[in-house]
Figure 1 (spheres, rainbow, N blue to C red):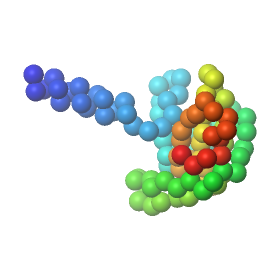
Figure 2 (cartoon, rainbow, N blue to C red):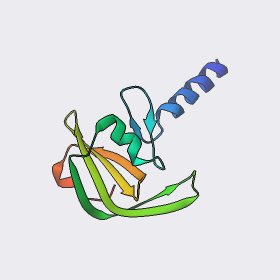
Figure 3 (cartoon, rainbow, N blue to C red):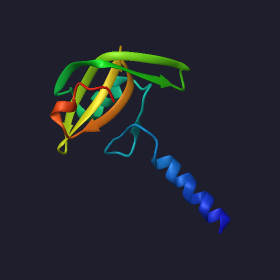
Figure 4 (tube, helix red, strand yellow):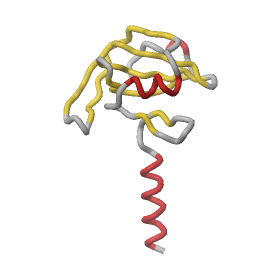
Length: 104
């Protein structure tokens, strides 16, 4: 019974990681290059200047901040990608067009 509970917790932890799940099952996370997202979704529909959004990227052991946000409209949701240079620093989504420039 304990082994089953541990296995279920491991599976849930794997599914809860932040990022964008692509159609082929791959996961694009903070720290990845924006070109990998372009390969799946093409160019963004909108580029916005948002309020400053920061995120600590564990793999690089550093915090990055940015005001550049790229937006794709997918399945009725706005997919938000905060970018610093060519690196994705944060991802999120919203259904509200008013919330596109707010920090997340």
